[in-house]
Structure formats: C-alpha cells, structure tokens
Image (cartoon, rainbow over all chains, first blue to last red; front, side, top):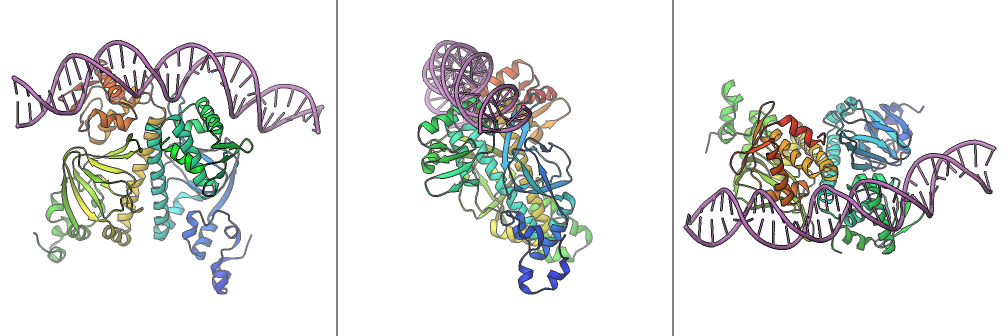
Length: 248
Length: 248
DNA sequence: CGGGCTCTTGACTCAGCTCAAGATTTGTGG
DNA sequence: CCACAAATCTTGAGCTGAGTCAAGAGCCCG
C-alpha cells in the first residue's frame, strides 16, 4: 500500500522524522503510546497493526477471555464493565480516542469491553507487542504509566462509589468528561456525551432515574445546558467541581 | 554490620545463591519484589535500604505528598485511603506483609497511608530505586505486575462499591481476607482481622453499624465464628463466596 | 475493678430505588 | 419530507435498605 521502510531509513533527514502511511495521518498518535516511538520503531509497529470497526453495542472483548489482541482506540467510545451473576452491571471506565485497550501483563482482560458508539481500533497481536515491549524499554515504561493513570482514576472512582451522594456523583461525571474529552476554557466547557443515561448510572452506581433527576436539577441550577441530545454545555465548571467534592 | 559484597561474589557458588544479612532472614522476601533479584542485586539493594517501625494509627504518607521514600511491608497492616473535604473517608486498599507501598512512576501517592497495627517497613529512596528499575528490566516488570494486580483488585472493588448489597459486601470482605492472609483449607479458614469495624465500613462504603449487623447475621447463619476479638473463623468458605456474588 | 474504648442492638428516618406513566428523540419506510 | 413505531429519557408516587441517633454490652489495660 505504501513505500517500504528501507527507502525512508536511507532517505533524507526530514523523511526520517515523519512517519509514513496511516500513522502519518493518525489523529491520536500523539495521545497514544505510539508517541514514545521513533519513526523506525513506528514503522515496525505499523507493519504489525490492523484496523477494525465495531458498531454501537458490539462486544469487543469478554471478561477473562485470554486474549490475542490489544488495541489503540482511534475514535469512538468504549465502556469497560463487570457483571454479577444476576446481571447487575458496574462500568469501571470509559475509553476514548488515544486510549489503550488491553491487559499488557496479565494476558487476561479483567472486564468486558463494549462499543458505545461506532469505534475504530488499531489492533496489535498481544504477543508481538509484548516482544516489542521487551525490546523497547521506553514502550514498557509508557504502558506502565498508562496502567498507573488507570489505577489513579480507579481509586478516585472508589471514593465516588463508596462515599459520594447522587448529586456529587453526577457532578463528578461531567467534570470527568470535561477533563478528558471536553472543549474547555476556564469557566465553561462543551462535552459530547455519547453514552446512555443507563450507562452513566452503571458507571456511578446509581439508577437511570436518579441520574436523570440529578441532571434535570443541575440544568435548573444553571450549571448545565443541553445542546442537542448528546452534547452538553457546562456553564460553570469551577462550581461543578466544588459540587463534585461535596463543598456545596 | 556484615561482610562486603565482594567477598560473596568471589566466594563459592553456594554463597552466591544465598543472600546475606537482613535479607537472608527476611520473612517476606519471596513474596516481595525482591524475589526477582539475583543475590548480587539483592546486596546492592540491601545497601540502600533502611528499616522503620510505625505505631498503630500513625500516618505513613500523605496524599499528593511528593515522596522520597517507597517501601516493602515487612509486617503489620496498612490502610490506604482517600478523604473528601468534609471528612468522609474511603479506604482504597489494605497492605499486608510482602506488599509494596509506593507510587513507582507518578512520584506522588494517590492516597494517604496509615498504620493499622504495628507496621515494620523496609524503605528505599524512590529516586535510587527508580535508577535500579531503569537498570534492571526484570525489576520494572515485577513492579508493573504489582500495579496490574492492584488495578485488578480496584476494579473488583468498584463492582462491590457500586452494585453489591451490604450482605454481599461484608461476605466479600471476609473472602478477600481469607484469600490474602488466611490459613485456608478447601472449606474453612481462620483469618486475623486487625482493622476496626469502622475501617471495614470505610472499605466497604457502609457504616460501622451496618457492618456490625451483617457480621452478627453471618455468625447466626453459622458461616462465621469468633475466635477472640481480632481472629475470626470462616466455617464455610464456598457458601460465603457464593453470598459475596449475590447467588444467595 | 473502674474508666474509656470499641462493638452491638434497637428505633426511627431518609436518600435513592422501584414501579408506572408520559414525553421526547430516533430511526424507518413510504 | 412526514408519519409512526420503537427506544430512550423524564417525572411522579410510594417503598425500602441502609443511615442516623441513642442506649447498652463487652473488652482491655492500668
């Protein structure tokens, strides 16, 4: 589909700085673990990647599935979740563009993963990526940093699930969205909300009805405003942040 | 205090296999990250370690403190927790002997850490341990695995905090204790419970009173029996496991 | 053996859940 | 482009599991 690596490696300096092919136009490269790779490394990785689309609601991986593939999210939103035998669901996190999907060390996913909307993945064979991780310490370090960040977020969410009120939880949710995917300035933000009310509820340990009531209340308080069903405007981010921590 | 590393390295093969000094008699070496180190590496690490005791209730680290020290837990129990501005507390995990205390990558602790009972730590300067991590990929790998396991446990706990009933939470707590520190056989287990009812409550997202009521109920059901205030016998571990997942 | 803990139990309250109607949005086919 | 069915979301009314408040029981340690 495109020129061989040899040409680029032998080419002028400028060519060596710029990745070729799909990676060159990848919108999430700077946000993903690929950002720590040199052009040569990127080309090697590119050669072992494949792209795949998942439609809304499609299951991407099952819990405890011993997995062959891991991936970067190119676009779309993924929900990661756990289930109890009777069907109760807890969403443990969402993945957005640039995020990494996969258990790099354990070999098994600790959660299910499902496409919330149309999701585009850049997939790698897990064993081959692990080889690269062994060969490139900076790649391992980067994936370690990723896991550390995921852990930090999980700990914050434990505080939310164990100790926050419904209002605080819903406020925290929109703060999280603003911080991760929002168009922010100091006081306001516009966020896309691709997930359903019931996904939000399963993320916050609440019911759909409670989430809906809390959102209505935040709208009445002038902190939130709808801009179409799946786009929301946060009118006062600092106040929302304070609400998320329980300080009124 | 003991012979130099050079002697051991030049000595007979048997000496090279056995660490010297404190590490030789360390009860948690095989459970800690030290288990992946060669004798020579262990000696190097030993030279930069120091031991310290913390008394019950003593604060070991503050959240967001940029930290100089990380540690292995030699003995005792540590609670890791987060606070809301108004004092609400969520315990995010307990550390027991052999566990690692510290944020290896971020440089900052995401939680407070406090001694539950008398705690003995084997401490390292964070920067110097990070240097060793850079030099010894197997050490970095081991600490990465540690973080992965911590993350898996956090995700399980999110399911508990978001979706389990009080009965299921308390059952899950004793199953966790049995799995991590219990004297187990297939059907029963004896576990030490060093933490207070209110610590258990703060770990489970409940109140002390609810925890106490649920424990009484499990005792009445014959699943639990007291063996002194801080030692408990689990009389039917499989049934307790089922209760923890909500299957009656 | 008494003072100060922690833990247990009881009685009552309430935040969030359940159940049930409507309202709004979305998708589809003519 | 509109109509209409299906899905999602909102709102209301009443219920309930866990919280709050309060009293009493055990336990530990001088």
